[in-house]
Image (tube, rainbow, N blue to C red):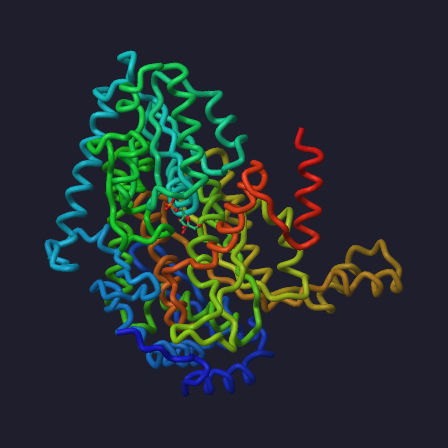
Length: 550
Ligand code: F6P
């Protein structure tokens, strides 16, 4: 059961407000000085991943009160509702069961009388058999050559998850297999990928839950036309095109045979679908076993999420801390900063995961909220980001809570690169926490001895770092499919937690519809099928385009 509570009306919220007033001016430096045990009190380990919350602007009392808020909003019951398959995506009338895709227990999970775990296993078997054929060189292209290049055509959840995972686990890629992704309806995306392909050895995976997404269908047609220019006979499509979809009828209409279709179900949300057939590109790139390891890592995090007390629950604490900064400190964005080049696409992936899920203003009763919900998610890999936007995190006027993510071991041990990388990783959260006082800045300048007193004083304000910038450090031993599965699942469950707290429906995405509707109408106008009249700006832009379209 989901409780439907405006979080600001809870007792815990009032207590948090009072607590915030007491704590807001406390500096993290002070908190660390006061309590040498702060790290051990405010960090936890899940499997081999460490979550260090101690550099957040919290005390143990903050976590106690935030946990009270989670309890008051019915977090435990809500978690059970999701895992049991209740229709918690009410605006679309669906259950939310991506967790079933990585549930390796022997349990049954009945939905409308069907054991969905058995259905999941069937598709997993189909995916495994397909990958085995592909990797053993038994799946041959139309001229009898083995496939060595896979192209995933999809967008949003049918692109970002698989693309991020394939990049993150590139180290484990099957020898001789390469992968590309086409997502944007901008023809440049397809053109740049297609020009490097050999049609005889390329497999196209058309990934679309609905199989109606215009961008994907356009790219799929472009790929098919390109392929047929070389292969000529439509019969060959069978060997080079497979589909991943819930809409098997539309797939067949496109010309992909049912035996080449990997299905999934409407209870898998697009942005939570990499664990389903949508993960076929991952399994093709890495091998099915690695894909299964990814699922097992996610399953381990699911078990932690479902069973750990709220106060020691990583996704719950991550969600609560997000709310703490958004609703009490007024933070409007949150940075995700992976110190691992392989994870460089994680921020982009999480943008959809978090912002498409909780970027909502109507609560679960249909009332417009009078509190903030999802902040902007952004970020990039360290250390590159240190040389671009870190200036603002350190000295800007807005508060940006950040997640710092790093492996203890590098998969590529070259010289002392990893030591240098991690030195930066540790230094940044330390610097953000501590800052540099005016006295310290002054002393440093005076010690250098090349400036007059006046010059020193003029420079001091520019050299001051306020510090007290909150960070959460997430460290694991090594980037493996298992660790990555656990990390992604943690963020997915954070989405769920925040949806419960903010009382919004996390699993629909009506906000993407208006643009789609208008684009459809404008496309007809641009093709001369209809005429339209818009506001003066849109009319002016269309006119400029028509005059210059060539
Ligand atoms: O952008 C909206 C959206 O519906 C996403 O939620 C989804 O991941 C994406 O489009 C792609 O949808 P589909 O897999 O149905 O092509």
